[in-house]
Each structure stands twice: as structure tokens, then as C-alpha cells.
Image (tube, rainbow, N blue to C red):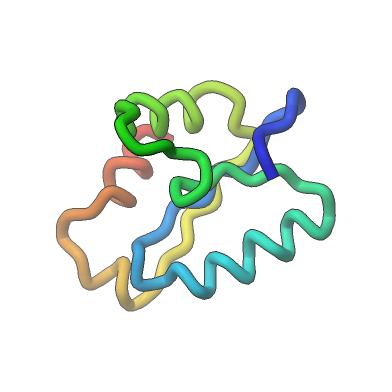
Length: 86
């Protein structure tokens, strides 16, 4: 689902949790909740840091941080940067 004019949920996660986040995304969208997710909403060649910043600071109604053993084990990740923006 693409961004709606009413905002979206931004999902922050680490790659290793992609399958779980796939299920979460399907669940949210089954309730007609728009989701912004990097694997779908970022195109090759775009300034991905800028697009992520826009998605978080712009029209996000909620920031959903998905923590797991994988994310906690990392000292550096894109998720940490997203948390700082949020």
C-alpha cells in the first residue's frame, strides 16, 4: 500500500527481521492502515537517507520500532538513525 493522504505508519526494523515485518505489514494493511517501508517505498538511485527523513518527519502518523535480539545486538544500524529522527 502506498502512502495515503492521511499519513502512514513508518516501520523501523533490521533486515534480519524482514519476514516478521512482512507479516506485520500485511496485518496493518488488512485494517486499511497505510504503511511506509523501505523495501517498497525506496527506489534505486534515490537519496534514501532523505526519503527516510521525509517519511518520518513528514506524514508519519506513527513510528513503529520493531526490536528483537537482532536489533539489540547491533551497535550501529539504520534503525538507530531512524530512532534518532523519530
